[in-house]
Amino acid sequence: MKTVDLTTRIKGLVFKNPVTVASGTFGTTGEYAGYVDYRKLGAIITKTITIKPREGNPMPRICETAGGMLNAIGLQNKGLDDFIANKIPYYAKIATPLIVNIAGESEGDFAKLARALQKHSRVVKAIELNLSCPNVEKGGAGFMKKRRLMKAAVKAARAETDRLLIAKLSPELGDVLEIAGEVLDAGADALGLINTLKGMAINIETRRSRIANITGGLSGPAIKPVALRYVYEVKKKYAVPVIAAGGIMTVRDALEFIIAGADLLAVGTANFVNPRATLDILEGMTEYCQRHGIRRIEELRGSFRHV
Amino acid sequence: MKRVDETVTIQENKRINGKYYKLVFKSARLARGVQAGQFLHVQIRPDAVDPFLRRPFSYYRIQHDRIEVLYEVLGRGTELLAGLGKGSHLKIMGPLGKAFTQQVRGKKRILVAGGVGVPPLVFLAEKNPVDYLLIGTKSRAEVLPKKELSKVRAEILHATNDGSYGVRGFVTALLEKIIQKEGAECLHIQTCGPAPMMNAVMDIAKREGIPGEASMEESMACGVGACLGCMVKTPEGWVPSCIEGPVFSFDRLVRTCA
Figure 1 (cartoon, rainbow over the protein chains, first blue to last red):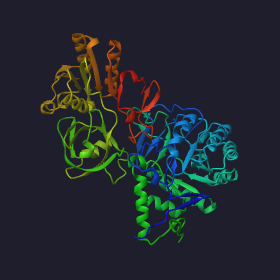
Figure 2: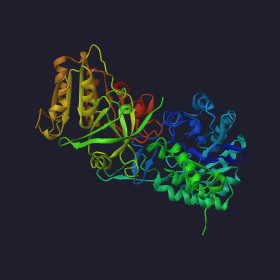
Figure 3: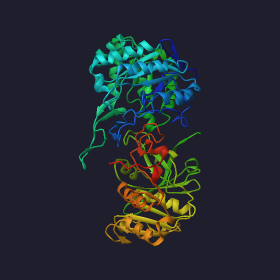
Figure 4: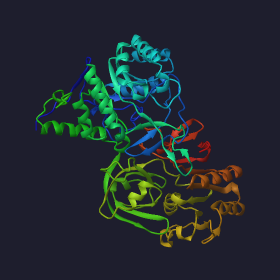
């Protein structure tokens, strides 16, 4: 069998394959190391880091839904200082490019986070801006609906870092195509499409929400068609790199996103169901390419046929 | 450390009384070094998205590579599981989580069990010297068959809500009697079961100053500490019960209103 070149390049960064993990679904340090050799992944995207530690939302935080799940974790994390002291050294030992996901409550927060991570540019290869968390008041999707603030956040981060800057968006923010243009103008290099969609589930016995936060972010196969549509539309309109996320469970899902034009594929909720989902997708991708005589993944990327 | 996610073949999966089903399969890797209180994370239909998430189940009994799980049908996942026959496949991660303290020295040990909390405590009592095993159920139909408890050397006491087996009322009434008889200072409690039962047990333990452990049950997604869904409140904040628990010392648990 001929080897398949899965190398993916984004603005000078080289990823040995397009498979990465969606923020918040792969822990912060080695939670999946017993199941996945992190060196085999194209990149690793961390759970969202904020300047100060965040306690997170009350319980229950998750609930299963048809073909997916709702979550309202509330960006629980130990904060920037802990990340730099305890997590950066862990990733420094792994050659896989690290993408750090950050969120803030003001443009100043984004600037401070980007500035701090820039100092660790040997390890931090890219910064992903979480502009679309549905589960927090300040700094979440609701807050970012004020477009001016969102653009300011991107600009502020851009001013502090030369790292690949990814803006992660959600249809919750408004018209994705319009917003994509705005964050690109503000200095983003790439787009993350899509974050979770805000949803709800009610326990009919208690008449209470199944999530303490009442609403939560819907993820999993249920949102895949929506994610695919946005990746396709954005790639058609703007020639920018896209990190696709939304219900990528199997190699079939992954290939659909590649054909639609995605550059990186962020496997998310699938990790919770199958801890080896990323590696299963990688193996399946090579197999598919071999079967179709594709030698480089580049040949497949964006090869969608309109007729 | 390399972790196990293995496809197993069901050897047995049948109802054993009015409450429990018994699932049996073989796996040397999933059986290795397991202690009572640890759990398995089961993908009930490995090639389907319904049910979407895995379900955690306590280990019940291990003989060499033979693993037994007792479960109740409580929702969609366990309903589908109950429908699977011999020869069906499950994908299982395990052993996961922290176990109960196996050896407790210088104390009389009381295990307080209810519902899905019975299997891990029977496991604990089969493997370790224990003084009392208190089991609370709704009625006689839910009491485990005698042969399932034949290897437990502890004094086994039952409480049923309707009084159809053992004493009438809650299992906590049995606990109060033992405390009166033995004196609180020499006791140690380990409990697993529905939240209201465990809360009542912990209230008594706190009042009497009795140390112990509780196995917490929360909805779970990943089972490896990544999703932060199955959180339990401790003095240091929310921690994932899948890796920091499910067994917690009483003094690490901060009560929250559900």
